[in-house]
Amino acid sequence: MAHSNTISDTNIDLLTTWPVNIGKAAELSGISPKMLRHYEMLGLLGDVVRTDSNYRQYTLADVHSLRFIRRARDMGFGLDAIAELVSLWHNRKRSSASVKRITQKHLEELAQRIEALQAMQRTLGGLLHLCPGDGRPDCPILDDLAHPPGTTETGTKLYKPATTAAPRRNTPRPH
Image 1 (spheres, rainbow, N blue to C red):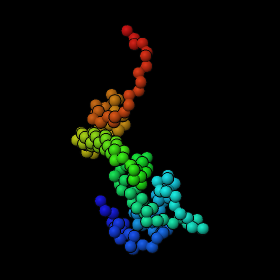
Image 2: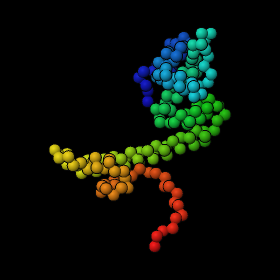
Image 3: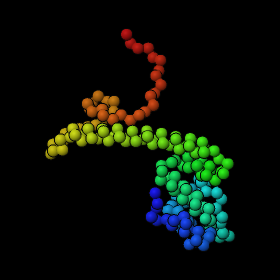
């Protein structure tokens, strides 16, 4: 997926005088200067060279790393996974199995989020169907939102998010 606000890889090194300041690096990578500083603070970039006046100076390699980070963020990877992927990307002795493991885990997490979103979609569709949408104040949508799933005050239990069950206590049951 190309970003319309970035220059193509084939032209970036030819059209630019290196190193560049933070504004130019942000423009070339499609990342805001604020996020660029954030990624630097998190250690996703190597040490960025600074001038005697303490201005950041970004190299072509830095901009390529920022583009890599941007693409990984666009694919939904979390910052921890991106840190691992950047490290693997820079390590020519890496194992592709490590990259595949990170990607497989992310894919599984995406599938879980998609399932949760589809469940929410079904719930909202069901509630929308139950709501008369007329001038009266009765509204099953508001009733459902007012009572969390699992309560008995509404008959609508179309969506219940996945949660981890609390451990059971060993308490005696009344006879």
